[in-house]
Image (cartoon, rainbow, N blue to C red):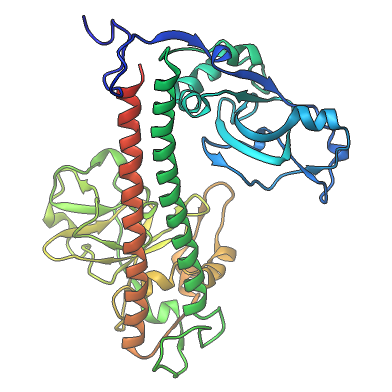
Length: 424
């Protein structure tokens, strides 16, 4: 008889062999909701946080949120709705309906329309409620026109196969708690590195209109040079508006830097020799005369969502590979010598982006023209060695971030694999 028919998972801890049983969430824990606090009673200096649906945006383990506050003196209300101990919170209406989070805070009170699950096997139950199956089931059961909502009974009646033995539930819960904590650790490290990079971009590169950075590598004192974009970079390479359907990642002879596939994935510099860039399907070399990119070329997104428009990447790693630019991009080629990677990081700095924002046009989809970009000002060290130091510094930061991102991806993949074989 197959494992599926016997209602047992593919993988389980030693010592457990009984078939799993169908159980409802209401049998695995207590399901309640919060109080309808009035917004007129909210106070920025209030003693208690008021946890509402807007505070649950994704499955996570959270301790601190920035939200509304309130003062409450009624001990019965405090005792009934206080979020001390361990809790699973479920969004019961709105755009995040069905999303869950672990939350614990003795200085927080639960608001109405947020489901709360308390259980002696909370870690095990959390894996059930944070699953895509639970999320999609709640979405399917939701009712309403303008605002969809679910009920406590629908949460309580959610049914799934679980071990009858609480010791097995506990072991499974502890395993996934450890995985979640490890994933969260690497996410925090990655977030910290991103903030560090953002800070260094502000410190190592001058503010617009200034000729000296706030922080500098030792041995360099000369003022930086300021030149208009159009004086040091020229738009001499045409782009090719290939539709997405003509791109693939498997085979080809010409790689294509497409704003949607690359500019939203890479930050500041793209190494063509190692990056996953699509090919132009059935492209012919002879049809792209004088259009191939060179190392040091800058590819800029000229029409995209607001956070992408104006984003630039410097191209490096081109050896024997043929590369062209694609849809909604423009290519700027330096006409003076720059150290590798310097321009890529400078053009994505906050100080430079502040120049671009007023030059963009559009509402939902923004665009920026070559003529407007040409009017912006670039600032750079006259000494190529200082440029190189800056580029190498950020290159190392990017490598460290990529290391944590790869670990994060592997851990997330590992968790998905374990969920698939340790649950039914």
